Each structure stands twice: as C-alpha cells, then as structure tokens.
Amino acid sequence: MADTHPRFAWFDGRLVPWEEARIHVYSPAVKYGTGVFEGLRGYWNEAEREMYVFRLREHLERLAFGIKVMRFDVIPDLAALERAVLEVVRANGFREGVHIRLSALLDGTGEMHAVGPVLFACTANTRPPTRALSEGLAAGVVSWRRPEDAAMPMRVKANANYQNGRLAVHEAKANGYGAGILLNSAGKVAEGPGMCLFMVRGGVAVTPSITSGILESITRDAVIRLLREELGVTVEEREVDRSELYAADEVFFCGTAWEVTPVTSVDRLPVGDGAVGALTRRLQSLYFAVAKGESALHPEWRTPVYATASARAAE
Ligand code: PMP
Image 1: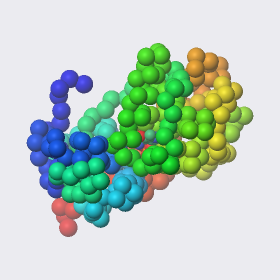
Image 2: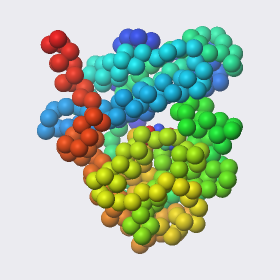
Image 3: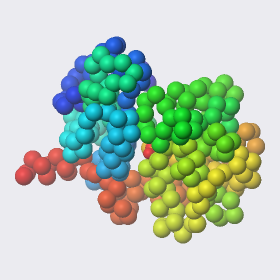
C-alpha cells in the first residue's frame, strides 16, 4: 500500500488523527516488543449496508488472556475496548472489508520486566482479497522452528513472538514459496507464521492440536465447528507429521488475515492433484457467508458496526 492511510485511529481512550497515534522510542513496547495484540476483521454486507466484526467477544477475551499471561498491570475494560473497535471503523466510514488491529502496549520508561502503564490502541484498514484465496498457494516447510511453550507462550498473541514468524516469512519467500510452514520443537507440524493449518485426508480433516506450539486461533475454532456441525466432516486435532502433508488430499491455512486459503503444493509436491480442494472450496464459501452475515448461522459471531451505533444513539 502507498502511504495512504485512514483518517482516524483510536489511541489511549479516544479517536485521534492517524498521525497522532504514536508511542515513545523509550517505551518497553519499542525497546522489547512488550505488547499483546489482536487482529480482527470487519466484513461488509452490501445488501444490508452493514459491517460485521467477526467474533469480537472472543478476540477481546484472548487479548485479556494475553494481558494476564504477560503480567501487565491492568484489568482491561472489555466493554470500552469493544466500543473502541466499533468506533474506529465507524469514524473512518468504511464500506468495504477491513482488518482491525487492537493493541495493549507498554508505555512509559520501564525496563524489560515493566508491567505498566498499559496503553490501548486500535486501527482499522481496508484489505482487499488476495489472489491466493481463489488460486491457492505454494507452501514450504522452513528451517525456523516454532518456539516451545517452555520458552515463549506462543498461544499468546505477544508482539515479540512475531519475530519468529517474520524470519519464517523471509525464508519462505527466499525459497520461492507463497507461505511458510513451521515445525515445532518436536519436529511436528505447528502452523504458518500468522495462520493455522489443516489437511484433509480420506475425507477427514486434521489439524495440529493446541499443544503443538500454535496460537489458539479463533478462525481455527470456527472452521472446526463449521466442518463438524455444518459440513458433517470429522475433525481430528492431533500431532501432524511433515510427510503427512505430502499424503494429504487437501491442505489449507486459516486465520483472521488468511481466512480460508487453499494450499496447492507443499515443498513443491502437489497436494492431491495440485488443484484447490473441493472441501476447501465449500468451507471457504460457508466461512465467508457466515462472516458476512449472508448465512443466518452463528449470529453470535457477528457484531454489527453501524446498527449498533444507531441503537445506542436511540437509547
Ligand atoms: N497463528 C498465528 C501465529 C497467528 O498470528 C494467527 C493470527 N492471529 C493465527 C494463527 C490465526 O489466529 P486467528 O484465527 O485467531 O486470527
């Protein structure tokens, strides 16, 4: 993206012009990457002229979990943060899909072990769909390993954890892949740098368990439920070997940013016949229908942005 940006950000309790959402170079957030964050999406429903934030409550709860595990000295006001998310989308008047970032950052002048003060910030940006969504992409296992839970809690969305993913992305790109796959310290498949992984084999969907060094992904949870409850597919959460990916009929990534993205080859070996898998396609269209509110399923997963504002104004 060029240096265009939305008009407003939400920063430390209020909406501010985008340029003013800044944090000091001496803050622990800058010095040590001391922060936790959430990536969320808002889906635009053209027929209803409404934006739906996907699984907002679950993202807020995961942020609160991260704040607890990283021992930040604050009990987050989730209702206020929920309003912040809706406000920043509304203030910018978005009428297309957005990616939202909600952060809890350590401000002040503290050192490595600082626990506060905690500064909350939220931004929303448009994000057009990728080509990989329809065409799929080539993935490759990278040499970087996902740190084990005994080293860093990777189930927390801590900013500093993303240096591991960053190196994985660079290696994958240097090797000509569209995405990297990380193994964990036991040599089993973990996930991608910012997304979880599923494979389908003999009609059964399989994904690494939450003790595999992965983030406890909200999309992964949604995908498991849609597969089981709506598509009648058995889902196994278990250890996955690298070479099982070579035997899979279908592979896909999932996550807030990646949505449901097909993988058509792993380590240059075609997945199945090398085309996007049929179940991946069905799941993808169901996922988008639910996220956008074009399906009536799981209304509790959608928080309307603009209707919520009119309802509040009418109170
Ligand atoms: N794994 C990692 C490492 C991630 O950063 C993300 C993105 N948050 C995911 C998986 C997917 O998680 P979610 O579905 O909650 O976005």
